[in-house]
Length: 153
Image 1: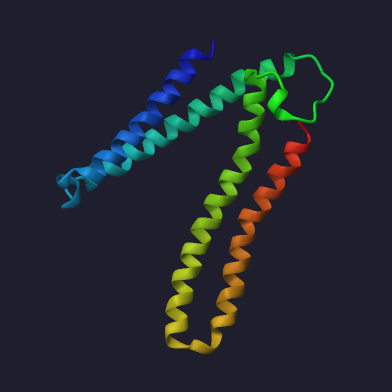
Image 2: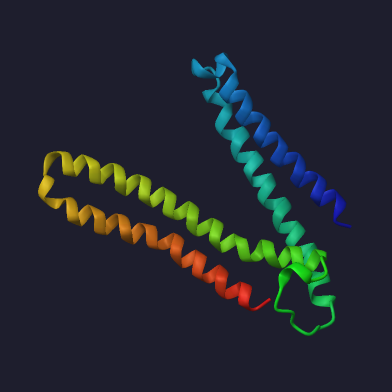
């Protein structure tokens, strides 16, 4: 039941990795001849990967819901491995991933703008640090949410 979805998701992930390696190693990619077809290819790969992950989570949620309630164990290392536990751990990692990506984008843009402003007006260096700290708080919120969700396992 899960094998076609797992195979398709793995194939799309492998093609993303291969495409990235080809872009890095091939000199024809460096001169800009790839720009007209690169964006649709990357977008379709990412969309297919996300569809595969959502399908895997939806198909696997039935196993999670079908498992009998067990006594909670304090240690995850001694818990029986199952598809349900794996999907729960993936679901815990998704908020962390999203918050870290959002924080990375925010810090990169705020940091670049902050450097440009500080080069012209050095007296507002403190404000730029505050803005960077607020952007970095996004990653901390995701981490706290994941820690709280780990406590519910």
